[in-house]
Image 1 (tube, protein in one colour):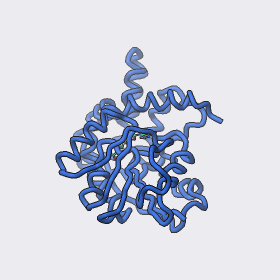
Image 2 (cartoon, rainbow, N blue to C red):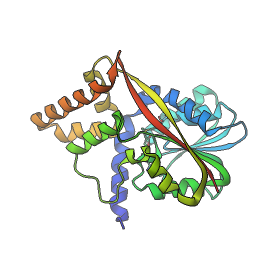
Image 3 (cartoon, rainbow, N blue to C red):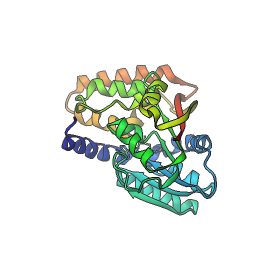
Length: 267
Ligand SMILES: C[S@@+](CC[C@H](N)C(=O)[O-])C[C@H]1O[C@@H](n2cnc3c(N)ncnc32)[C@H](O)[C@@H]1O
């Protein structure tokens, strides 16, 4: 059993790390439309977006006429989410909170979605248990995740080689990108589990441009830079490895990233 205070410290670090993610909403905006389509969101439904960040999925669902709530750990991203719903002219109930302890009643939503969000909660069975608890029986759960064997998964593995190990009991987020894990974690709580693959595109002028953006905007990238600031050799080694990795996926100024979408019905 992982100690609760260790997990709270881990989440507090995550909250600080994700505070600079807002510029990447341009990249997750097209995939948000794909997830909302995949989840079959319709006007009048109640929808929860878990790990909503700046709210790209929530706003997309609200523009379909759904009644939407968005929850995220990071207050800086929720500030931008407020701005996004105001600009789009939709009403969304934004909440600061933790995917592992959702501040909603049982069976409150017709649809629960997460785009590259709940995968960062440390314990899959806890986050998934919460997402299913707040979903009505017969309701739809749908989420997008990055797999371990493609660019983002490899990037997280690279961060891991330069950062201290996470506390025991923290599951690596890209494990959510494997169908067999999703199937095992869902167990008998759902039926009609199905999968679809999507592709997201990250424009980048060079491997260095991609790395600079990652070092500025992502929790892992920021942590690596902070940790290696006084170790020039290790920083150079990290950057060389990063350039080699991204170069494998960069073609015509675009990094092509595959991802997994999972969808199921709560029994
Ligand atoms: C890669 S971003 C995705 C944001 C947004 N869904 C999108 O597609 O643009 C990951 C998000 O997960 C949030 N997050 C990480 N751990 C969380 C947790 N335990 N509970 C709720 N949100 C969490 C971060 O604050 C961040 O907004």
